[in-house]
Amino acid sequence: MSKLWGGRFTKETNKLVEKETASISFDQKLANEDIQGSIAHVNMLATTGTVTQEEAETIVNGLKSVQSKLNNNELAFSVEHEDIHMNIEKFLIDEIGPLGGKLHTGRSRNDQVATDMHLYLKKHTEEIIELVKSTQEAILIISKENVETILPGYTHLQRAQPISFAHHMLAYFWMLQRDKERLIDSLKRVSGSPLGAGALAGTTFPIDRHQVANELGFDYVYPNSMDAVSDRDFILEFMSVSSIMMMHISRLAEELVIWSSQEFQFIELDDSFCTGSSIMPQKKNPDVPELLRAKTGRVYGNLIGLLTVLKGLPLAYNKDMQEDKEGMFDTVETLEASLMMLAPMIETMTVKKDNMKQAVSEDYSNATDIADYLVTKGVPFRQAHEVIGKIVLYGIDNQKYLLDLSMEEYKTFSDHFEEDIYHVLAPEQVVANRHSFGGTSQTQVKEQLELAMQAMNK
Image (cartoon, rainbow, N blue to C red; front, side):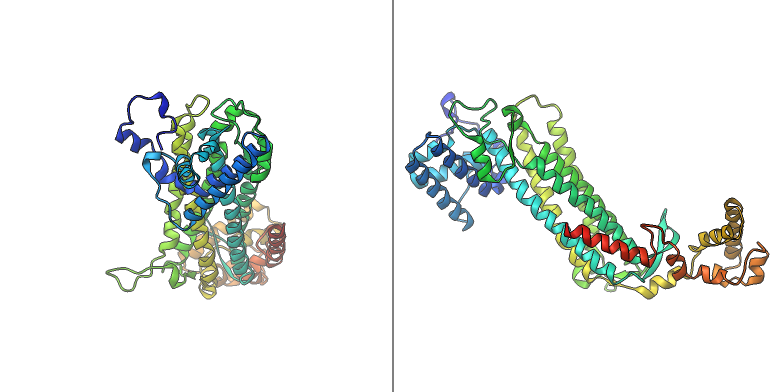
């Protein structure tokens, strides 16, 4: 088959140009979507009388035969035929003869590729939403098991206040919930059909774009043909949502790395998610969460790359847009792989409750509760804050924690201290007292778990 557009030209394409402008090396990922769109298109051509019903049936059967060979890895794509559209058309013509050339009636590769990407991203966005749900379920499982588990909460990576481990993990549940909601909302923009927009101005053939959209499961048809072929906002939105999600995944991955270190020993990751050292046999390296941190950068890069490609493009289609696919494919594959590793890694990790409890017993993270205690005794907060600051300094100088100080020592700082201060400073009580809505008390965490499960069931 000669070039689809070869009639205008007197020379063959330079082989280097042919290689560099061809996209088949990566857009073959769209093969199933391309066939799906082509079947809907030819069915519409039959309905509107552009091709006969018999011709449409022959073309559809030919496309299904090509798809069967595709799924059995029996097709050899060729750079000579440039892209997935022309390769599929070549396979179709080989299958049914010159009649296959009628398939392209009333459409352009411009609206065809846009349709393929809408179909591809719609399918994978729905799959990623399910993977997010699986990760949320893993977080819920480990949270339900650790409502009573207490560890230090941090700000500035300095110990701040004791918290429930479930409360800490549920923070990531809600991050993922927002990510999931953004993905669901983005489907509104993915679910538009560009097919029938032609190269940029529509077509003279009596096509029915709405019939094609309905058959392909789209919710609406682009009302402007130029926008239809040049819009890549739906990909940018997906990449943006993916970047935010990878940032959330990276933050959790960072904590898993820190918590599994010998300095913390708050958790231990399952052996199946770690590797060893080629020279240091004692090592157990948290490679998976480390990779999740790093892969965030490539997702960011894909977003910035496409934004840069599109920033100066005049309407409508430009060859620059060939650069929209590899970043989209990479983002989809990176996000899917990350979520598929994250969920089982969370489910199988061991929570070292005793180490966490020991940590909150050997710090000053209960200091705020002394200030609150003095306020309930009538001491102004600013004065109480100064008193506890001096007590902490005294404890550091004398290598004592707040629960180690005697009542005589407390009395030297304020006459308001009574024996009940020791009850107030117990880590379990410190956590239990944070009972404001959304707080870390066991009661509030259990209520939060109920809200989380309701959110999952929506």
